[in-house]
Length: 258
Image 1 (cartoon, rainbow, N blue to C red):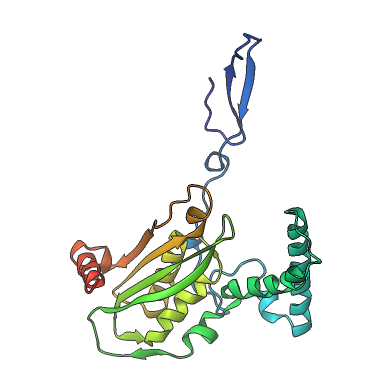
Image 2: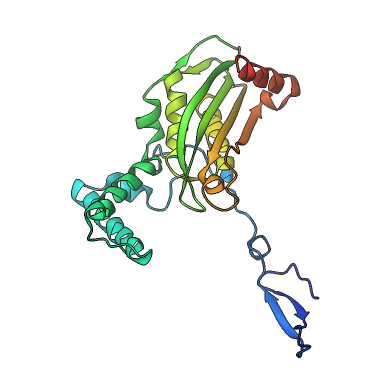
């Protein structure tokens, strides 16, 4: 067996069939991690000059499109959905499915509205205030609904956000809006946790930020291993929350009254 860590190379091995036929070569393509290094989004600024946060390639076009252009986008998505329905063996002309492509297209645009949400104009709205407060602030049990980018099925749960101010505080509802903005994208839970934490750190420059997410993933519950009742927890700790005592205080407060 040959092993290689060079990009684009393959791993080969041999296998004999039960009938003792000549050896057959099995080719395994290199994994993505061997093909190219990770390029973390965290190398980019959480809030860009135009107010968007980690915009996708179509963010600006979608944010600036007219009502007519938006409908054209809906029609293109609906056409693709109609193809999917036909390919799974459905009759797209039956009553229950006649309007499904259009409904799904509009729903998908809502599920992904976080891509073109402007963090300055749509989320913060001048809700950052000077305040001489340096104790922990926690908003817990913020409900979020998102789409797993691997299977395009939902994951949902609760976000808990804590921070220790450094002369600035943010309106409490804005923490929920911040979580909502990042959740309304194609996501993985690990990234979602870090995006919320890094954005809040950039906006307030606090002493520290902590984000914990508890979520149920339908890609685990309704397909694949089908493990109902499974719960995924992720966290992102920045600043003083990396210290053991501060982290423990935050987690202890979260677990009270549970």
